[in-house]
Amino acid sequence: MDANLGHVLLIANPAAQNGNGAKAIEAVVPLLREALGEQNVVLARTVGPHHATDLAKRAQGADTVIALGGDGVIHEIVNGLMQRDGFERPALGVIPVGSGNDFARSLGISSRPDIACGQILRGCQSAIDMGCANGQWFMETLSFGLDAAIAIDTMERRKKSGKSGAALYMESGFDQLLHHLDSYRYTASFDGGEPVSGESITFAVQNGPYYGGGFKICPEARLDDGVLDLCIAHPPVSVAKAIYLFLRAKGGGHVGFMNIEMLRCTTAHIEFEQQPPAQVDGEKLQGRVFDVRLDPASLRVIAPLGQ
Image 1 (cartoon, rainbow, N blue to C red):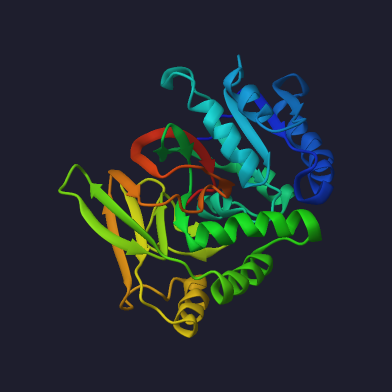
Image 2 (cartoon, rainbow, N blue to C red):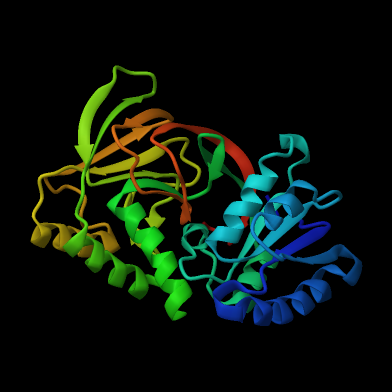
């Protein structure tokens, strides 16, 4: 389906990536207005947490919402859009200006704002699945344990250092692997099946293949395949082997190793004995019990042709 953007609401985070969001706004707004007409592009700048969710939820008259920012702002916008009835839910375009950009990577969108803008203008619409955990929607990733601890620690390091990207994720990863290689006991049922008990170091539930700024934790995951892909890393595992698997996970090379379990499902009920570190699309999540489900083909997105 042709993109046919119609009336566009551009929700932009000027503070994204240490202020690069403001520069990206200056670059893409003229491009969008030149291509679509001044009256067809409305710019809304976010001013704080959850503002993007509210803007997306109230995007009256918009045929397309374009998110400009990192995965956190895109996550907020998606949660706003998913509160709209399906028939009046605008399509979503993404101009990534962040440190991870995992959702944009799954869509095949460039990390350069000007190129991403061109991809949206020339792209096509398609419907993707959405994940939901305890009422919170996610477009790419939900995880518990080590990888969530790394994601949360990476956010804190980013605030302090101004660094970004996969290098910072790896820096945090080595620190967590060396000093906090914890495991978490759980009981889970998948697709309504019998409960199974286990212990995990990492428990990832993926709609798309990536987390952590390009780590391919579930290489076969697709945004439109109608299933969630899971990767569970079980103990025991030595620190040396954990580091080895962590490095291999960058390209998806951890799959097939002993201790690594890969599953697929559309619903899951997961109970941890103690509250684990948890993240959803890179944002901190609290809880010990999680109900997870997939809503197939529920959000229209704009992606390059061939994606």
